[in-house]
Length: 112
Length: 113
Image 1 (cartoon, each protein chain N blue to C red):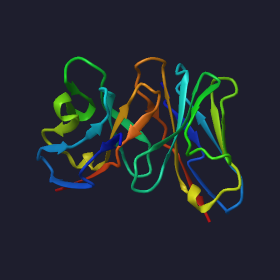
Image 2 (cartoon, chains in turn brown, purple):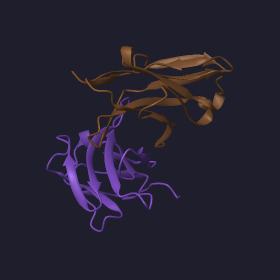
Image 3 (cartoon, each protein chain N blue to C red):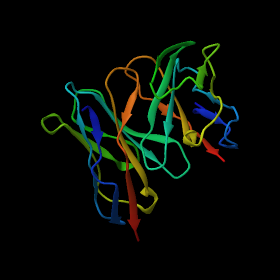
Image 4 (cartoon, each protein chain N blue to C red):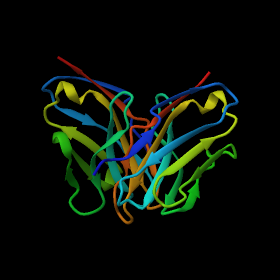
């Protein structure tokens, strides 16, 4: 079945440590790919997007993501996590059908 | 760029009542989307407009739900005869036409008593 998978429901990292959030998709064609972040009770903020070209994309707040076609993955990374990064992170794909399909999200907790 | 605005932020109502939510997109965006997000899940697509035309509706959008965008600017989402299962966050997003990302509002949280 076509889907977006975020394997980790919760991740806890220490402040200053590196972070990688995983995202895999199962679609025949390469979709457009996005990462959004959501703080409690708030809407979604776009972190970064991939449409084509360079497979390593830079986003806001020091985040980056790498598209790997062979693995159907679009993992989000940050070299040094800050306490303010604690939130829920969503991977999403756009199949050029004018709608986003989201993963179930990964909740990031940051230990001080 | 004032962002996507949604009103109200919270709505509490009794089962069986009708509710209406409003979304004001970013001014130059001609596409507008509605999503529903339940606890512990990612948002799910409900419907989208290009200008005033509603071009797609999800099967999640039962006949109790109706969305309009009468002048191609703001949009409303109405739920008639609300049910417990309608409790969720309703998110609106907008985008420009073409390969453009969607920008989300802060949502309307609906609680059905």
